[in-house]
Amino acid sequence: MEINKRPETMARITTPQLAEAFIAEQVAEIQKQVGDKKVLLALSGGVDSSVVAALLIKAIGKQLVCVHVNHGLMRKNESENVIEVFGKELDANLVYVDATDRFLNLLKDVSDPETKRIIIGNEFIEVFADEARKLEGVSFLAQGTIYPDILESIKQAEGKEAVKSHHNVGGLPEDLQFELVEPLKFLYKDEVRVVGETLGLPHAMVYRQPFPGPGLGVRCLGAITRDRLHALREADAILREEFDNSGLAGKVWQYFIAIPDIKSVGVKNESRYEGWPAIIRAVNTTDAMTATIEEIPYAVLHKVTARITAEVEGINRVLYDLTPKPTGTIEWE
Ligand code: XMP
Image (cartoon, rainbow, N blue to C red; front, side, top):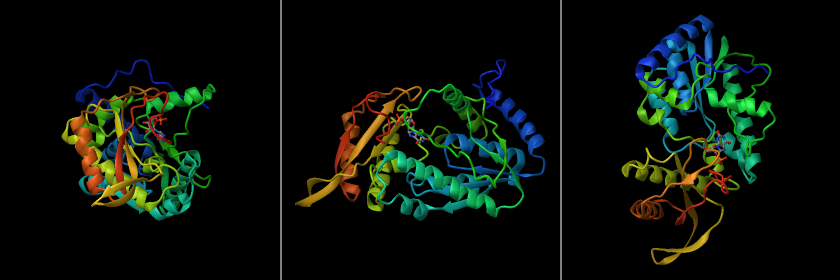
């Protein structure tokens, strides 16, 4: 496998002016590569795919077809945001696929984390390939590959193993052969963000905390059920809202709720109330290889606990995970 390295002469993109120059250069390059052909993009709503989408919309407009697959494991309002920003504001050629049932049916009774990841990754490719086959005249596939992904591939090529498999849109079926368009492949994350903001994407989208490909699927621990997944989505939305309100959102690298498949006895409205615990995870890291615990003020913890136990059906306790990585990983699965 031939792996390209970032040119040593390439200046770090730290300002809107440098981003403008990068954008102009990439727009010309994309137009030259693509001509009048169509380009397909799996638009997850994550930072990288969103910035690629905005860049390609600028370069080739409606020749870009964005496919957003909602696997039913998105956080609250995420698919709606993708539709709002790309479908409405940027007037993109956007195909929205609600594949919730396909994914959740396949995941029924599956409790092993790596099996869940494989199912989600493979089904994602299936759904995306099904959509790609429906489209005519698409010659290119755009990907939000960034430089750390390339560095990771170099590590893997050197035989260094990862603890968990991290999936992106990987190998498509053989009947779908596309040429790749990867305009961000030499950029680091901070540069991608500067480019995204310069392209006019909303700050919240560009500074979105990392969200794993399998989404809430690896936070609804063990075998996923629709009711626990719903509780997780609601509890996670409350945590994020309170982090926004208290100014923690910009300070903490990744924060979320995980819900294990256990119930404890509790009491609500003077009656016995068996429910799941919601576990708060809030970590800081630079490279996700190790992580430290963010100290959340008690007032925020109390507020989050009060709101989740009052507002979310099925939850009767809130726990705060104090484990750094190692020994914990950031995700629970
Ligand atoms: P761990 O749990 O390995 O997580 O400490 C490190 C970082 O990777 C993210 N993560 C994933 N990202 N697909 C992804 O795209 C995955 O399967 C996956 N598993 C973990 C995790 O959210 C954290 O940022």
